[in-house]
Image (cartoon, rainbow, N blue to C red):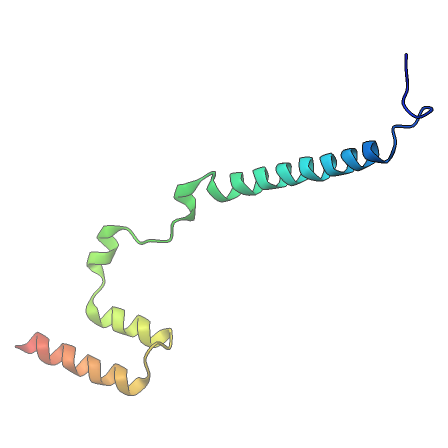
Length: 89
């Protein structure tokens, strides 16, 4: 059996093993992340079902926007009045 450099593989062998080990573990980690992220696509959806969207009233949508601070109190009151006036007609 023949060995290189007197039983030593040289710097290139150690560098190759180090790079190979880093690439191997990077591939394992990327695979695990991909399985977690894309493995169960239906569990990651946040959209509401269509039947739930139909049951929400315009006042509820406006109240939700007010609760999330997308609109202030005066804008909320103004839009509620517009909605109620439109409903009377």
